[in-house]
Length: 251
Ligand SMILES: [Zn+2]
Image (cartoon, protein in one colour):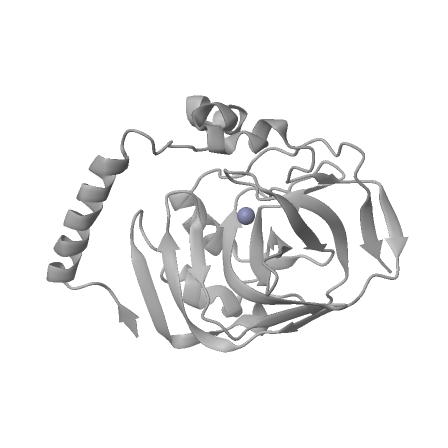
């Protein structure tokens, strides 16, 4: 079942939004992916975004030279759940209620949301895939862990269909109660990964993010990829210099 807001709720929300926008218009930077709003200018748009230019552990990166290591296995205990889809003007984000966990060695994270970029932000030996999904997790201590799942065109992906059947338009928020998303089915079968230190790939580009990019890609159908690109033709930050970072690869 899909809840679209009633006209009354919508006009109330629009009024509230108009008031907020009027208030925020002076200092809300409209960052984006093209021209003056593009990634090269993020740091100039707001002092709060200076890490985008000054950071030394920025994401995304090109994954090329790696060091193989016995990294702890990723254990995803993801629920089947109702989700809320939001088009925030930069991507489609799927907000997940509490209760889905990711354990990596002695760290436990809670899944907060996942969202998409096209083309993929991370590259493998310089090559993009069609899209990437970023699963954003937070530990009890407040540490962020993001799992990147590379997406190639191929067979339709039924696990993602509840999302791609209801992609929200700009500013729209849609709660999908049924079908529930089986979050565990969104990940590939093999959870081998590349691990590196990085940042948020959007302003304010905060660092201290533990990145885990899965080695095995998943597929979406060309129609599913096209549906996303109709909303966001290109929303990937270019790769950032490694600055001495080492990319570790699970065995
Ligand atoms: Zn992302």
